[in-house]
Image 1: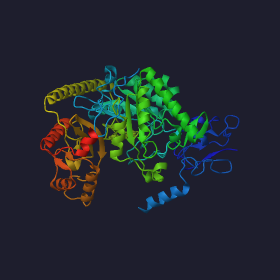
Image 2: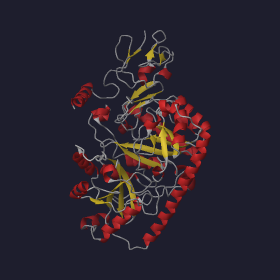
Image 3: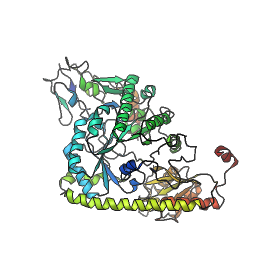
Image 4: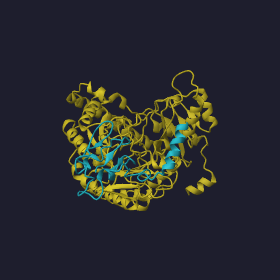
Length: 92
Length: 496
């Protein structure tokens, strides 16, 4: 069982020092999690630390590939509103 | 260190507070000598100094421990100038190298700041490694940090051990109900804490940090973002509280919220304040200490004088090729800094003399007038209307001249003979001068002259290269004496 960082990661470094298993490392184009080391913070913390500080919705997946912070959960921006704003910008 | 409350009465609309106005003041005139000493060469703290001294920020702190609704963590952006945005993230070693290169090449530089793009104190290793190295290798540079305050209490001890005279804390509220509308979450004790509970923790840490810094004798400036409908009515209370606790300067900044920035406020259509709303709130907050009004809301990797970013000259690839003899640079810097300090002192003395002379003139009883000034710095009128990147807005009144704000422009004149969109850009520039009755510049063309007049703004190019404040007062006196500023009955009643 291990968490995963995907391409929407903005390399903000916030997760790396928090990982109790030293499973997170800097890589290009984005940070990665060593699946052999990741314990999902079992035994260390109540919540997985990387997912608890990551500011980017959808950037961290659980062992089933499901985003721990789904769209709208962190910023409070309803996903349809975000899509609407981005569509309008691209139209210009 | 406690600062005396000099004037706890709110300023009247359109008028002046004793602390922030009057022709005899400089912006920091009410401060004790030791504080003045600490801020007189800091462009972000002293309105006077920002015309002469430069600063730089290094981007070593990418991680953040809170989310603000006006921030988007995709900070890697080349063409935007706003807080939190940087082009190049540096390691502490690179940051030290860059700082010394800039200090050698821009000798007017006095201050190195760390302001993000995340929170410097959420990146304590990177931030303090940079400060430690600079304290040793570049002892003539003042260090500065800007923080959201969540991790401040545990950092105060270490902060006090470096060459740090000032800390900026961004405090947008003291009420968790309001905080919940600004901060969706904070990361605290290994958990993400949302809503009011998170905001309450943040507020407590900010206030505790502020008190601890003041107790250590470190100067604290408080930044607040004015968000209409969210905290605009609340910020005068914030101002009162932080001043009581010893913050020496309050900087109320307008919200920046465009949809394309992808922030909560941008996407949800939250508007920023108008120039008039911002000014009104700044006047309300101005009491025992001055409001800071010259903030340019810089990028977190800005380099140079405020409003003039020279970051492109100092990218890491260019710095790698530079040979720096810092010892020689430091000697040169000292000579230049001393000369600037002398010039500033002379101007202060001259200003006091002029103010004394003015007291002998008959006291005017005319209404205040806003005037815009095109300037490239040094406190003089030295820019052509069409080349102005920004206008500084001053208020002239019988009590003197006070700086109100700056307003950015789109350059409409690039020096070419023709420009397809010149007219629309000119119209836009004229709109940014809304509320001003006069615009002063070194020179102005026939077409903008006509259009400004049509918009009810009187252009004036007669005071080129003169001191701004003196020229503004001279124009005000002319207007007053020609009978153009008679108060209406309504205004007299309001002012009574």
